[in-house]
Image 1 (cartoon, each protein chain N blue to C red):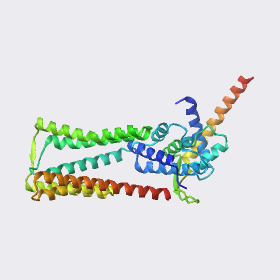
Image 2: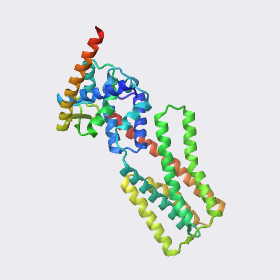
Image 3: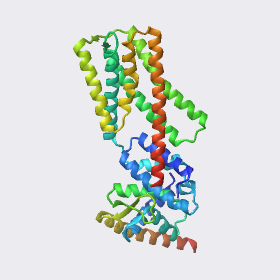
Length: 110
Length: 255
């Protein structure tokens, strides 16, 4: 796997935590939100292995509910306390990383 | 709205791949249900399964499998049940034979062969579900897999004839005890797995044989009758199983 894919995976995990932190949500809705924010390079199905990992690490909990449209049952995600702490850590790390990267790239562009 | 055939095939392959990779059945069901919901929403907007998974099906299945724990508890449970089932078949066929006896090699060899066959089936399912194969190639793999236990059993039979190991002769009371133990295993496993397979198959194999052996027909007629009943029974069983699976699938798609 290329390093850019690995980086994107790490970023995506943080972004998914942020989306879930906004309120109970499900896979398709999360994907729509990601696309809305410009993550069009992410294929839709790629969030599910990441969601599995978030659940395995105890960062989210899930529950199955009936859909209003009468379609198949839907799995909803909620952030746990551990997930919130992880999100806070991600925000902090991303803040310092993006600041440094932007600073360096801006200098390069001069 | 129903899912497209392409999506249903992908979900079937994914289910088979994850189960044959030793993942927990409940977790597999959960993952598949979540993808059904996604594909259902995506197809309403005209998207195809290819655009959703983004990679080759094999790569995507691997990515999902990587995040799921290997369920050794389930595997041990299935192997135990499989060995018990194999053991029950072995003692029942011996108990119903004219001179009930079993060698040490048979006693160990048959259950080992059953487990080896179980692993082979898992490997084959794993391979077929994650590769796009022509119908011809797929049929060849199934044929080869189907032939393997037969070849192994013949091998063991020949080995048993040339290599003598201690043989246990069953008396009248041990024969009856063997039949009761075998039947208890078949019933126990059927109740546990909530299927009739392990009651239907031994009934099809042994009951006609047992009844026909007690008639006055000559040997060749006995063989023809018991094989015909076995064959017709197997075809009917396969037909009704297929009908049941299709009905269940249809119901699942509608729900």
